[in-house]
Amino acid sequence: MTKKRDEITDADYEALANLRYILRRFSEFSTSAAQQEGLPSQQHQALLAMKGYRGDTPLSVGVLADRLLIAPHTASELVERLVSAGYVTREPDPADKRRQTLALTTRAADILKRLSTIHLTEIRDMAPRLIELLSDLRNEDPFPSS
Image 1 (cartoon, helix red, strand yellow):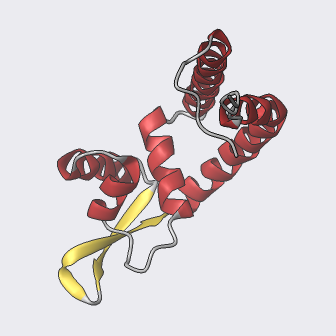
Image 2 (cartoon, rainbow, N blue to C red):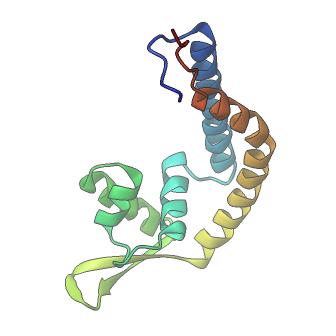
């Protein structure tokens, strides 16, 4: 039977630091790729969250705020910028006319496809190292039996 270690080792610190480094590198890559397409990073994240949403309720500003971990008023401002830029449309929700549903435009779908293609390539390139780091963090040493 194995138990979690009580002490954090130098190898644990190294694995955590390396994991954070890889995540920061990916984040920087993602920000740069979005900017090359003329999108601020947060707008790219919003478009991706919208495209990937498969919830039981229609996609609304509130749902988007939850998906992006931002305040509803911040999501509302973000959606307004996306609508103004021609990336998103708002329509009344047929079930609740007080609420608006969000949808991507063809322009947004085209940019998102280009960005997602290069993001998937980057993730596939970094996957072996990421898997190795996560595996190192997952391993648990048993306490020596006495």
